[in-house]
Image (cartoon, rainbow, N blue to C red; front, side, top):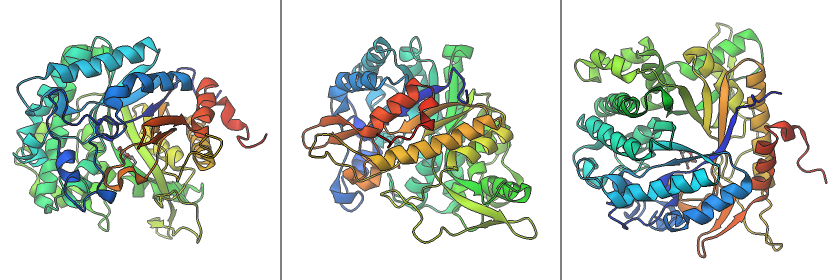
Length: 459
Ligand code: BGC
């Protein structure tokens, strides 16, 4: 059997994308409330004010998870619900919501996997500089403690940051996500270092409460460098392309910048050559904190690029052939995306790898028969999971897979026009409909991947 018997199957969401109830029960505005309220920032002027109304409908949503037979559910906590001012006074009502959600999940036999930061920073902390201000690191540790003290008796699986690349790259460099800034490299580097320190302090706060009973991870993202062929030269070129500094890409999208310090306790030499002048003084002293031992390497993966070696062994990215498959967002469909990232990450960091997100946007709607026939999502996921199975067969220690997303939701600057869910949401009525892919994935989870070898479309 390719997938180990204790393999974790699940689906994921994030607080701002599904909860709504943006100003209820003491929640303060997050940077996403402010950003999405500014015309032009989000497609169609959409905001997360109501989203999937999950804050009020979480019982119905857990019942749907149960219907899908979901063993594990990854969700995030909204910092502005817990500590509206960013630091200091705790909002009991905010904590109570997550406590009720966790109880509901456990009663349905669903294991909670909690992400502490999935982008909804309290605006009050942004007002004092957000990630560019080192004071945020203690605030994040304080918030972590409060959450872990309340939920830690029932939640064992924790992730500090979701996609630090997007926090900084889209939020502070490209200006496409909240808070919408385009900062110079000196600020980008400092914010990156602060985020890494915040991760380390958060790990310390978690360990202080749960010790080794907590399963702690960190969730970067990247595009996979997929070897064009299985020749040793192409594999090595792809591996180098995956981790090495690339001058042609914005600094923040170099994977090792955000993973080597956490898993190896160092900035790689090629990246250090570019950033050292901008790091805060005494940065070396932070490395032991940043690299506190954690239990798994999460990774969010959506697509990959084919890489071949040139005559000197250097990586060359191949252009996609004309008409290559794409998702609704025009993201490349590359079925070896999960395979090679898992192999490379496991080899370099020696930690169990968990695919914490993978999925696609597709143009789904409810058919006249009342169902959602999203065949593209089934085909995509089958291809990607067969690639993952291959990685495991080749020796990569991959211990879990979470589909993004459980349900259609607020897709950041794309608003509600992009649908990533296994469950369709009608945003006018809040009616949920499990898509064909949801039922198909239910069988994959139930058979621990065995059903991936059946043709999903044969009748
Ligand atoms: C994020 C999700 C997002 C998904 C699809 C990831 O970048 O973690 O919040 O909805 O990918 O874009």
